[in-house]
Figure (cartoon, rainbow, N blue to C red):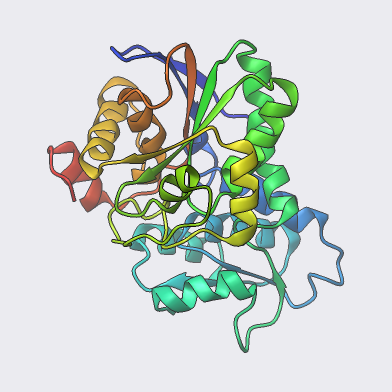
Length: 296
């Protein structure tokens, strides 16, 4: 669906607008890329079904797209993936294969999982997936032609690449800022260094963004498209989640609140700034802790 772009009335260094991808039918932008990739595939490519590696949101997108195509969907998921997301995948008919985080990451790198056949829909690197994500950028330019910046949560980089490619093609002067949790921010470390840089990774409640390292192809895209990379402390992410709930009546997962948190701390500069609220799939217990003022 074409999601709303709404103004958030809040005291901030800039004029904040929210692109509410959390209102997609699966609660995440990932549906755009999944549908784009599966619909673009030939029937012969779909004969053995589709496979992806995902912590939850892309898994839901691929399961939805596979159901629409009438084929099997199998999901390689890290064993720490949120139960709320996995339950949603299974409701859509997806089959979960739970693996350690390192195996999940290697599946994305290798674009395959031993013993599981089917069309592999990469959650980040597929051109068709990034093109689907790029439709968000087209909508932003149509709905807010004079935007000055867009802040995008960075997980693998496919969302940023899609949005930035579209926006900068039509509005070259628009700044693109990425937001990662400070405990898992490889791009924020790599961009100023001018090369991929190792980080000390710590998992957190912000499970849909950040990571251990950069995928090589995504680094090539990032250095061309991203103007600034922000590493956001976890307490500021939790605060942004609470603000979205109280001020905008929007439920956002940790990754979905990252962009707002970056904008509130001034990392997006001044002017009209669009924050991508990428998803709203969060375990109820985690959300309850955030709304109570805790940092999970």
